[in-house]
Image (cartoon, rainbow, N blue to C red; front, side, top):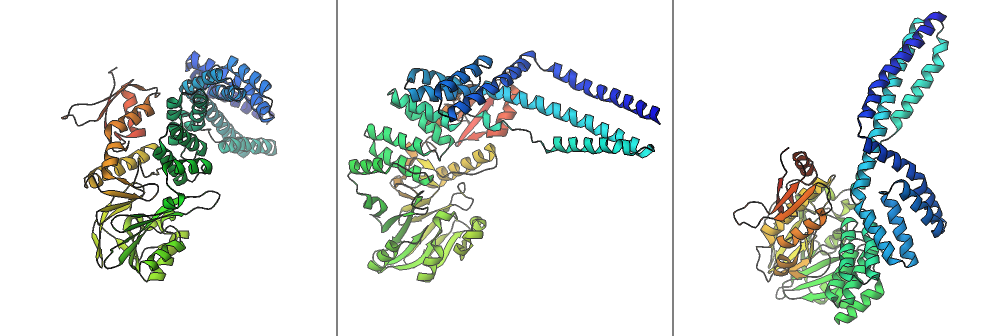
Length: 547
C-alpha cells in the first residue's frame, strides 16, 4: 500500500508539472515589453502606498519623496503624477503642478493597458492554479476510494477543497473604470489653470469634469465664478441652476452676487409670471442641506379660470394661495414624467381639487414603491390632445430621460419637463455606455423632429432652470446644433488611443455627419459595441486601413 501511495504521489507530481507547462509557455508568449512593464508597475506600487500614508498624515515632503520614487520605478504611474500635482498645487508651485497633471492625463491610456495586462496575467495564473487543484482533488478522491488507509487522504482532500473555494471566491479586479480619466483630474487641472489666469482653458477643464461627474459641486461653483468674472451673468446663473438640478450645493454668496448683477431679486426666480397665463413655481424637492430645485407650473385661461397643474414635485402653500387669489378651477394634474422630484405633490393636489392625474403609460413602472401613492389615474396612451374645459393640451411623446417622457404644448407654450433645458437635454441612464448613447440619440431625435419644428418663438418652460425658446435652443444648444455637437464629440474622443482622425462630412448628399478613422478594422467592431453608430444625434462613418 505504501508503494501505491508513493506511486500515486509521483504520478500526481508529473501530472501537475505537465499541467503547468502550457501556462509556462503561455507566459513566455507575452511580449517581453509588457512583462517588464507589469514588473515595473508592481515594484512601484509600494512606493505609491507609502506616499498615500504620508499624505494622509499631512507630511507633504515625505509623500512627495515616495511619489517620485514610485515614478522612478514606473514613470507612467498616473496616480503618482496626480498626487504630486496636488502637492505642488498646495505649495503654490503652479508650473510643476501643471506639468504633473498633464502627465497624469497623458499617461492614462498607457497605465490602463498595463493594468489590463496585469489583470490578464493574474487571471491566467488563477485559472491554471484552479485546474491544477481540480486535477489534484480528482486524484486524491480516487485514491481515497481505492485505498484502505483513507484517513491518510482526508486531510489533503479537505485542504485542496479549501484552496479551490478560496480561488473561486476571488473576484477579478476590473480596470474598466481606468479606461477614462477621472473627473477630479480635470477639476484639479482647471484649478491650476484658473490660478494661472488661463481662464478659457480652465473653463474647458471644469466642463469636462462636470460631464464625467455631474455631482462635482466645486466644479460648478468655479465655472460659475469664471462666468461671473467675465460678466456673463446669465451663464453663471444657468451653471448654478444645473448644479441644483444635479443635487449639489452651490455658493450662495456667489448666487446672490449674480442675481444682484442681473438686477433680479431671488423672489422673482422662485416664483414668476409669464405671458399666456403661466405661473412658474420653483420648488425644493430635496432638503435644506442638499436642495433640488424643480419647476412646477399653473397654466390657466384668463377668461374662464380653467387651469392645469404641471409637475407638482412637492406641496407648497404658494400654489394654493395663487389658485385661490385668481379663483382658478384646476381641471387636471399633468406629469411630464414619473420621477420623484416631479410627482411628490400629485396625491395631495388631486384630492384637494378632485381631479385626475395624467401620465404616459410607458412611465407606469416609475410609480412604484414610495411613489405608488402618486400614481396616475389616467394613462396617456399616444400623442393625443387632452381637453380640459377651455384649455387644450397637445401631448408630445419624447422618450429618453424616461421612456414615458412627454412635453405639453398649451396656448403656444411648451412645457418640456426634463427632456429639453436651456443649453442642455435630460440625463439618461443605461447599463452600458452603448445603452446610454442609444437613449441619448433617441432623446435628441425626438427633440429635433418633434420640438424643433415648432415656431421659433415658442416659449420653452423646462422642469429645471430658466425658460428659453425653440429658436435659442436650435441655434445654441450643443446637443441640437450639429456643429456644436461635433465639437463635444471631438473633445470627447481627442485622447482616444484608437481614433486617428475625426472630421465632419460636409456634403449635403452624404448620409453621415462625422467620419472617424480608427487604427485597424478590429477597432471598428469594438467602437460600435461601446458607442454604436450614432452619437449626440450625429451619424458616424467608421473607417480603418485594411491590413
